[in-house]
Length: 223
Image 1 (tube, helix red, strand yellow):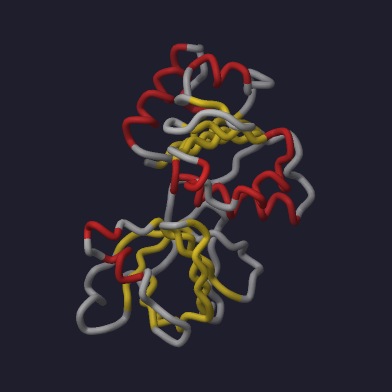
Image 2: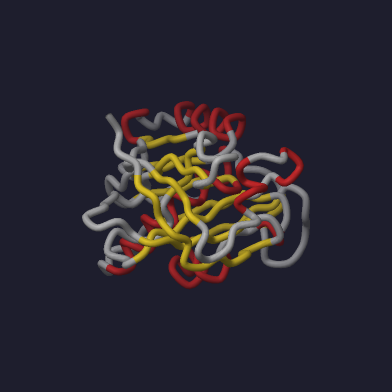
């Protein structure tokens, strides 16, 4: 049976107009691998049965747990409630799980909140001074939607490409993640590929990779 933990919120911060960062206490002995997630609920009578999956965005040696969560206010659900939490409120979390883990240098392709498992991986690789050579293509609707833009740019430098579907101009590419854009950012056919984002986007990206002759075994994907 999966174990659950009650943790107190330490701090909250809005990162964009609809993305919140929540840091909580870390249970003694609790451990996860960068890229993993857990089931999380607000620990009160009204919401504690409403568990949803969220990715850890901190690193395993942090003294706290961190989650970066996109808020869907119009749905009036869990994420809308998480927008209203404060330090001292309680959350219920489960054991870590998830398919995404780092298997070697390569190209990361994220759409919107799909960046979250990659944040933990990039931060951990940077701490170990082995992030160099990894690249990121990050797709969003507008520049206001980009999560942790400054940090990603600092970590990856020229190895991050921001592409926006609903905005043109400036230093961003406009449009969608295409086979041509993927080819531009492949440095070696031996690269690993890491995909996370909305299902239609991931289906298209995976199809493009297969059409290029990329072995599906080289692709790590979580939708």
